[in-house]
Length: 136
Image 1: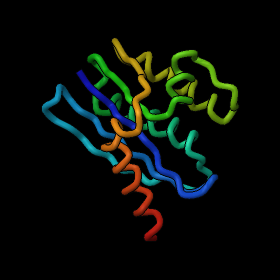
Image 2 (image 1 turned 90 degrees about the horizontal axis):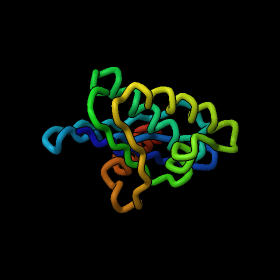
Image 3 (image 1 turned 180 degrees about the vertical axis):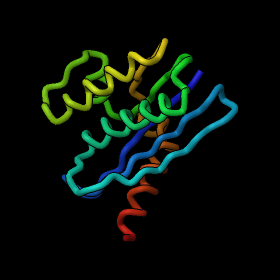
Image 4 (image 1 turned 30 degrees about the vertical axis):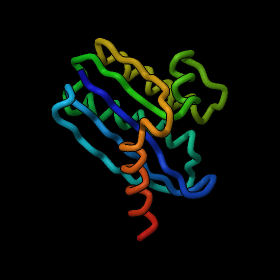
């Protein structure tokens, strides 16, 4: 079983952004990814979609898409968009469609909303990525 926690941090609206991915494997091993995003076009919602997309890509690239996977996000918009397979905003729709295609690569996958306080690991990683952008 894999648990993927994803989050984004944005400076401005739109602005620079970083994403954080915390991946737990059967509660034994973990990976942490703190990834600065290029450009200054990011709003928080778009960066949240990008974070989950990158998390799924990473799991597939590493061959970790062959078991039950639970994805957690503190973005209600993202979780609801996936549940409904629909989002109004065309900027988000392209990300949603890519996410839905990648989700088909997993035997069982779910995306659930969690409160911010339960997503602190991914949040800290996203903030670290944003700090690295601001230093350059």
